[in-house]
Image 1 (cartoon, rainbow, N blue to C red):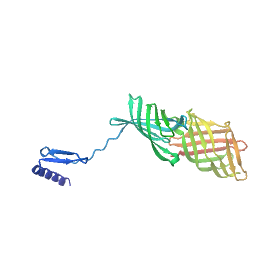
Image 2: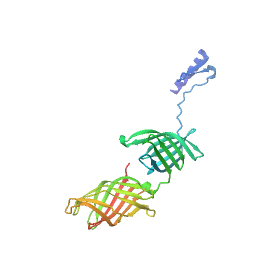
Image 3: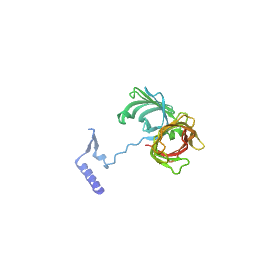
Image 4: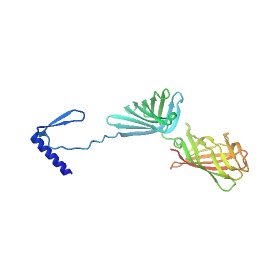
Length: 313
């Protein structure tokens, strides 16, 4: 095929030399370029050039504070990222966050200090079934603190990104789905509650709050089918030595509702008492383990529960 193509071109050039003194090329935009036949030695058809891709210069992670008519500088430890890219003569900044969407901006940087630019933000609207809406936005600040202003979102919204190395609390924060294994101390066997959800939130002081969803167990001695209601343990502090969050919440005044249909019928709130202690640890593989050993006022036996779960996507 290549030989045939070459012969066609050679024949074309030979005919051009005999029959014409010039070659006229009309482009798709209507413009015309004319070449003298004597100046043409070879004609080649080359593949179109692939546009160069923006080059990543920097990538940073941090947390957000959001201010509008509903939120007053509320903090979000959701792993917000800022990427700085070079695209020819332009500098781009890309914003991404699991809750506050994505943004793309063309910016200027004054000696890598002052940042200013304009662009678009794309944010999911929970009131519209999660449909993504696009907003005009501006960006200003420095590489340690960047404010994204969106005038048309909720009467005006400022999303401020703060550079910060990810804390242990921000790494573990999230919604988890997994299984709880429960043992009643002094009784044989264990009991399982599948598809249990736990919510972990990060506090500004580096501690976390843990909210357990309702758990259901079957065949528990004396109580039969047992339902343990939802409750929240707050301010679990980080223990660097064990890379875990720990709290003895015996005196926190927390209550949990228990309901059963067995020989021992339960249907009321029970206060946690000494010793009730929760330990939360995030493994390197992303698995969350919550060890929760507790006692309830009015219950003769203590309970040992172990939850294992993965962060929901």
